[in-house]
Image 1: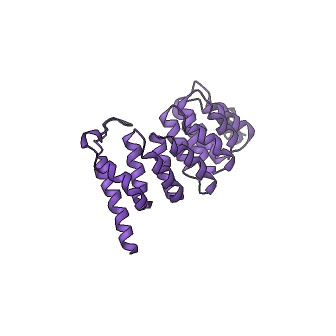
Image 2: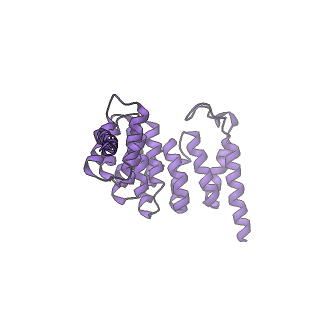
Image 3: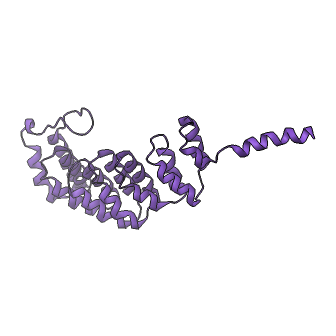
Length: 247
């Protein structure tokens, strides 16, 4: 009898412990305990777990775990809905995870999110688009690249890897941008894929006064001065080298 009682006590205690879903939002538990409860639910696609993970996205302690859990559970809809969260960290996390699905149905919303005012959200959404291997992503990258700016430059870089011809068209348009980095990315693409028709515009940049070709403020922190004249000359050399090889 005593032996049975000894076995029964820990079983009763175990049964008395709240389920992992209940532990997620238990304010009496430490952040580590709540995070452990989240990890314990990884792989579950039960409706109550999905609802709990959607709620947990708004909790800074659980957000990273919850967003990954939703991805693993293939819970696309809650992640899509999270793109409308007022919290930029939640939007960024959701965008990052959605890219792994490479769903064509998500191209529109990810493209819109790539234009988010918050740079972290926008870069994560663009990173999601860059995960796509389907050619259907090309028009979205093209539209973003045409806009100019940091996200556009990143989109142009990706576009040059998936469709160099379209990237070249966009790059030629960006040479007229007032932003130095736009011109720099454009010349990289033109240098890699352009032809003799691009040489006059490149020579014009290469011969411009040096003091007008430096931009010191861009993106995060400090960036070194950018010499567009040197970049233009590099693009010219690359095009001329290809032309010589064909002769």
